[in-house]
Length: 199
Image (cartoon, rainbow, N blue to C red; front, side, top):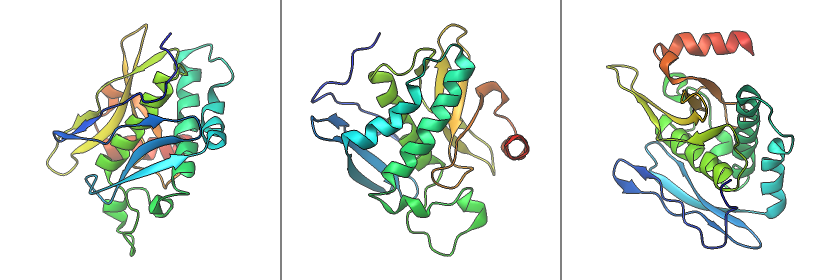
C-alpha cells in the first residue's frame, strides 16, 4: 500500500517537456496546479480545504470489490474534483468538445491537453493517498491522427495489465469522464456517441 501523501511531497508531471508545478499537501489545505486556456497556457495554483478534499475522496470510502467498481468510483471522484477546483478557477465555464462546439466565451475553456494533465494530477493524488486498489496511474495516452489528435489520462488495471483512458474532454466541467479500454480508443466520435447512449 502506498503511503499517504505527507507534507512537502512533490508530484511532478511532464507535458511537452515542461515541468508542471508540484503538488503539496499541508495540514490546512491541499495545493495543486490546474491547467486551462488550451495547451496548459494558464497554470493556476489552487488550494482546496480539507473538507473539500474529503468530499472528493469520499467516493472511495466504500471498498471497491472489483476493478469495474473502482473505475466507477474514479469517474465520480474526478467529476466532483472538477466541481471543487472550479470554485477557484474559471473552469466552471468549460464546455465539452469545445474545439468543435466553439463557445462564444473561451474563458476557462480546456482542451484535451489541459483535461488530461489535470485528470492525471487528480488520479496521482488518489494513488498517492492509497485510494486506488485495483489500478495504477500511467503515462497519458496519445492518439495521433490528421484531424483527431487527442490526449487522455490513463490508468492500468493492476492484475490484468489492461490500460484504460479517463477522458473528461467530451463532457462539460464536473460531469463524469468517459472511461474505456485504451485499445478501443480508435474512433473518438464513435466512442462519444456510444457513451451518450449508455448514459
